[in-house]
Length: 332
Image 1 (cartoon, rainbow, N blue to C red):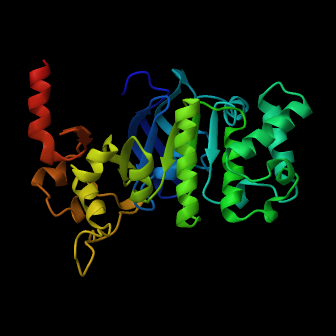
Image 2: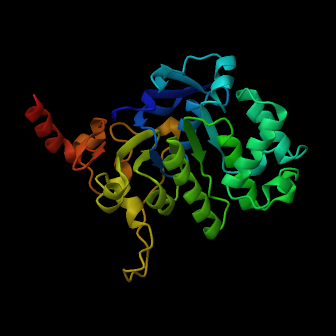
């Protein structure tokens, strides 16, 4: 864990009971985020990225549940909170930005009504003070003529502007942590850049921590300080974003990087990772990635690797076992 962590997730396990038994969707996920830091979480669909975010804010869909592990916000455990306690935390201490802004906004109420209600729920402000704060939030997130647009309804905004309203809602009560789940996926490239710039400014100006969930490595490279790569419900590599992108240590991360088009290289075909991510009821023994890995060792089929030192990052890969063991011996 990094020093002075705002959010700490330790050995998080999320399970879904089914008629065929328990499905383990997250299996021992651990990471931390410091104040003012943006941690990117990346991986294929089904890797567990959004589920991790949902578990942190207490929005797991039944029958999903946290089976074990800890989630701490500013040192305080929040994974054992009641629904009433979680409602007080959501919005006030943790803000959420989701992929589809229309799913986060009520079409029957103006954006101003929704902002004012959120602000007054969490902050001791009068109606007039809350309205003024709502206008300031709209202005801060780049909505033109906020004093007029505050009275408009969600359908009167473009997709990019609706996402800005959702960001304003997430920031309404000045949360310590913002969980942004695919916030730029539905937006065109120019609007993406503006939203990315806004998230970075939030961190810089407010000292808030951001967990940015995405499948877009370009967004990760542009926005994040560190990145966690997920595969089959586990983190397989985590480290500083430039190191993970330019010198990946896990074969899965290497495959992700190789599949990104490079304007400086003349290639007829993009690299691809053969096979598909395993189903939750068919995760292989040992390293879950070994059936798709071009560098599989015999040990990979038998033993599941934990995160270990791999240069300037940490990777769950037996290729780095000797290096990690040598470092552990030197530390003793």
